[in-house]
Amino acid sequence: MLRSMKRFSAPASVHPDPTRPPDDDSDASLSDGSKKVKTTQSFEPLFNSESLSDIVLDVNHGEAVFHAHKTIVGLKSERLAALITSLATTPSDNSSKPVLHLQEAPECSAVFSRFLYFIYSGAVWLHRDYVVPLFKLSVKYGVNALANHCENYILQLLNKCMAVDINCANPPPTLSVTTVCDLYEESVYREETRRMAFNVLARRFVDLIHTERWITCEWLTVRDLLRCDDCLCEENLILVAATDWMKRNKLQDKGRIQEILSSIRYPRLPRRVLYHLYTAASFKNFPQVQDLIEAAIKYHCFKDVPEAQDEFTGLQYRARGKGRTRHTVCGGENLNSQELQHQAHSWQWEEASPDSNYNSGQCCDSIADFSRSDEVNDNHSHQHTLLCRAQRQTNHRPMASPVAAVHPRVHSSDREICSNTTDIALQINIHSHSQM
Image (cartoon, helix red, strand yellow):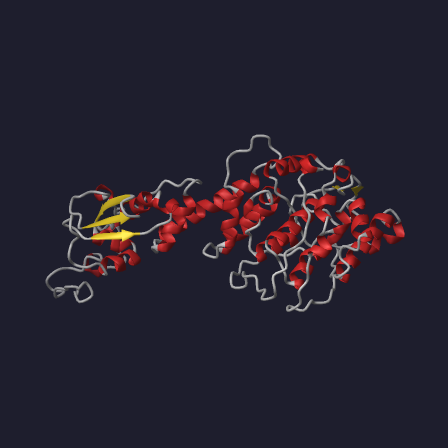
């Protein structure tokens, strides 16, 4: 019916064109007696008012009910307008107005009033606790102005997360690391927002691996974090976290297992861990990874020999985290900036067949156990101590890291794990500290 209505236009001789200045003078100004003024249109007084209301919005079967106006709501949201148009013309039994039933997630239902208030007034109060569900509502119903406001505020919150001192005893409240992980993995956000979310994840990697959200991270999220140069975490704990992710997700693609194992910076592991990995032939089915371990052993043996310095270049020899002038190996050994100088270096390894299966438990058995031993961890930093305490509280395990620093990919098309091979549970023995 609305589509069949035509806009009435009287002949130009009947009335002047209100969109144009007098005499159709495009150069009209105050000096010649003309001025154009404009006010902000607002229907705020009609928000949830029965006055002139011609429809009822029922969210989640009575969880929230609002008196609304078809014209106002339809002007601001084409998707709501389409839903309103599709309603039957006959009113419901107990109402003189048609009722539009909407189904929303609980967190979105809780802020639907703020969403509807923005439609009427153009104003909204934003807060970190509910800005994400408010953004989801605005995207779902195509209210782009509100979506832009929400995402800009989310970006401000992410910047605030980056500015917080992670070693502060009482840091100010910020977005939770699980929320930040969702921001990175959902393609609906702008690339700028997702890149900033990734930076926060890398900075708060220790927090992430101690949540159940770490286990549900998508493959590309894990891979990008493993390759990131900014993960602030001890390398042996990164190894444990990566192994745990493979085990809990029953990863069975040999190529991906190899990619994860090749992303660990083995020169940054304690020498006792390297010795265990080497003597136990933990990675005997991954000769490329075994080569990395042997290179790490050579590094620990000859890193102080001037003639050998050129052999130890590349990201695999550099401690994670930027802006440091000196770096500490997990065993407590200091490396100067010359030893950590980054030069272009490319590791080459054979591509594993995508159809090949491998029981990664054969290569990872007891790695996490050994990496967490008290003797290995005695010389770790205060940050590591706090991490271990968190492990005892959550009875969860950690790990992850890369050989080459890369920018996080924000494409969502390849975010599924493509493994059609038979299920092979990772046989990884991971014990809590309380059992040691």
